Image (cartoon, rainbow, N blue to C red; front, side, top):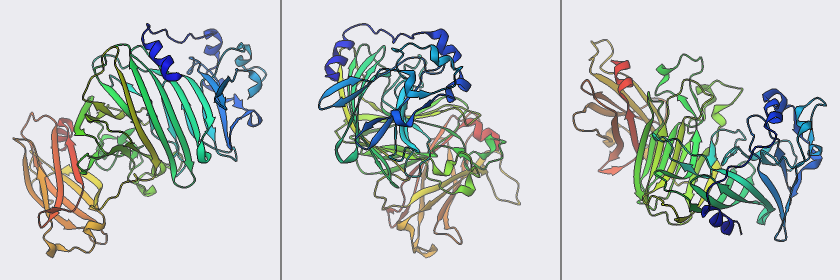
Length: 478
């Protein structure tokens, strides 16, 4: 039924959701909003899963409709101040009964914590295996990181029902200027393991889209060990995720460390019938963050696993400059090779894993750290045209190996960029192996894309590391 409605909507001009009583919503500012609490006894029970609703406010003005589905019949949950505890002088008392809600969240059975929330545009996020919110997912991304304005379609209606095996089914209607859609999301919370979400999206296009983002993930990366010099903050590292991981259709495992560039940078990794990709927080050591308030070491990793053939396209990574942790500046998604035109219909199915580490069998060693610094040798004059790149690997494929095993670094760089004295050695006191080389780039060099991995007897021992060095990093370290 939602798919039929989405198709019918796509045949008509887009009509934005009206904002009712904007003068009242203006008064529900940050302070007034957090004082409004959903009543525990008013929760909508979806089997054993309680659902609570978010109140409208100055930062969430466009209402969504929420329906409870039982035996195939949908019943709208009509807004009432009775659902909420709020101060007597709260401006929210002036809202009319048809105000609607800003979104919803699903609670754990003890009602003490939520594990997924839908709030704003087509955003949603879950807390993963370690119960710490971090990055967000979106229903769709349109023209992200381009010269034209990005478009943010929104989930305007939700239909909630209990699903099999204790899971919850969320059916959602998407609407925006260029696209409409019908989404079916089967959500499951696995204690101690994170969440799994099976999603099917049927999309109907009102207008052409230049850059379509399927299964988009949005995160924050300020600095890590690779670009510590970009911040004067007291903490060693600040990021929700530290890398983009890809498993290609051919089975190659790729790790791309995230950057905080001096300009918007788009990186594309072309493939066919990709097996998966995700934004990952690999560094789980508290000592590397020292933040016991927001716990970056516990932020979830999110892995996108297609459950239908996606054909040709590219994983695209958008990196936007930031000088603070309050901004999401990283976006990753699948961009199909075929650009949608007005009247087109597309369907994609995939599974989202919100977990501590991706559910991918890793027979090869993985990247555990990327560092850059001054080139040359300590105690000797430093060459002004070189920087040093150091990459650490760890994993079963390297266990038990010694220097006698002839492990070799394989490093490639663009034409005109020289790789100087690459070598590899075990890191004393650990199970890690370290690849070291100097990068020699002439003045005026643009962004340098590097590719590296370790081999033994001609066979790879590690995943493929894809490093990207920007001109400002080169100049800063010269």
